[in-house]
Amino acid sequence: MAERNASPAMGSRGESLLFLTEDQLRRGIEAMFFAYRGFTADPDRILQEYGYGRAHHRAIHFINRTPGTTVNNLLSILGVTKQSLNRVLRALVEDGLVESRVGTRDKRERHLYLTDEGKALERELSEAQRARMRAAFRNAGPEAVAGFRAVLEQMMDPEMRRHYLDGVDNG
Image 1 (spheres, helix red, strand yellow):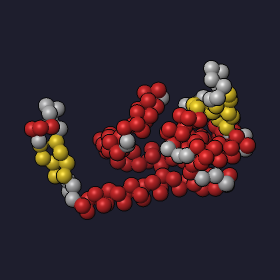
Image 2 (tube, rainbow, N blue to C red):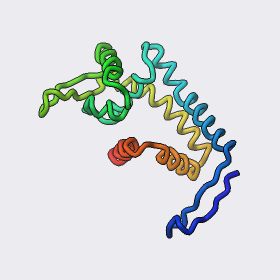
Image 3 (tube, rainbow, N blue to C red):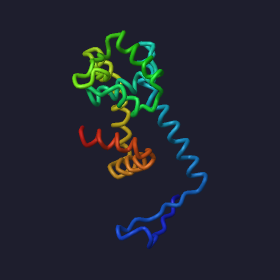
Image 4 (cartoon, one colour):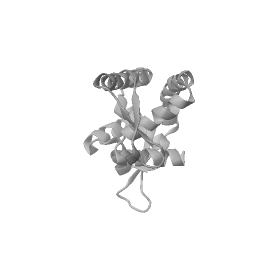
């Protein structure tokens, strides 16, 4: 059980520090591993039919989230090498799921869009995850959902948190 101690140094908002034992932290880490495994299981089965992996899923997700995003922006969000992303994008373009358009202002930029087939695959993948997330959120309740989001946001690196919050604000 977590123990909370108020700290006068925390400010006037009444924030408190949360002290956790090593066992509680280990269990939290394991919970993340197992939750991630469950969260990715359904999409992994769908992706396997196409010969794709999680990198393809992430690319499809973020291209859908921000149609017209640039390759450089996608590189920043995914945190992968240009070579790795190019392999993923090449397959998605060749299979007719992603369209790459040359930038109108900067001809060196490539803007990425999902095709109708790409949008259909994205819907199938995300619906599997939404169903799992919806059930978990309903079972846990609104306070747990708010706490879960707060914890995830605090675990993000600042740059990734900015990407995430930009997406939340625009979506």
